[in-house]
Each structure stands twice: as structure tokens, then as C-alpha cells.
Amino acid sequence: MREVLLLLVIGLAIGIPSAMGLGRYVSTQLYGIQPHDAAIAGWTVVLLTVVSTLAGLIPAQRASRIDPILALRTE
Image (cartoon, rainbow, N blue to C red; front, side, top):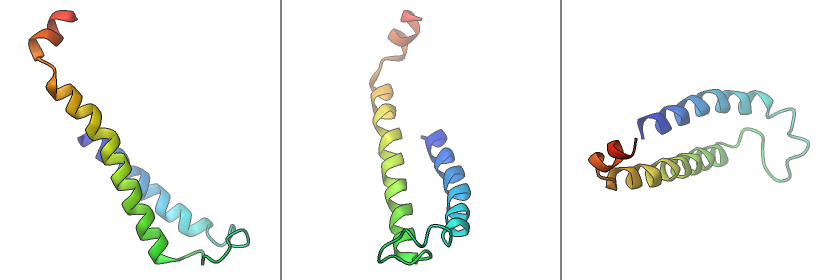
């Protein structure tokens, strides 16, 4: 889970400034949305956090259910 959250933080640290910087270039294609709308940016961050946490949590739970002795024996 630590790796998943680290990738999320790195992606958000790169993506948010990039989106803010490129927002005015795509503003002509946005309909009814301002390029620097804080509410949409906030919901996007929340959605990405939830999806990435679930994407990392499901395999982590499966891996925690495996008996370590059996996992080492198969290798």
C-alpha cells in the first residue's frame, strides 16, 4: 500500500500543476466548466485517491491471506 500511495502522491504532484498550467489551452473545449474550477479539481483528487487506494487495497488483502510458508515453498 505504501508504494501505491507513493505513486499517487507523485502523480498528483506532477498532474495538478500540469493541469493548472495547461487549463487555459483547453479552455475552448470545455463546456460549462471554468479551467481553474476548484470544486472539480477537488473532486478529481478525491476520486483518484479512492480509486488508487482500492486498486492497491484489493491485491494487498489477497496477499495477506496467503500463508507465508506455502508461498515460500512454491518458490
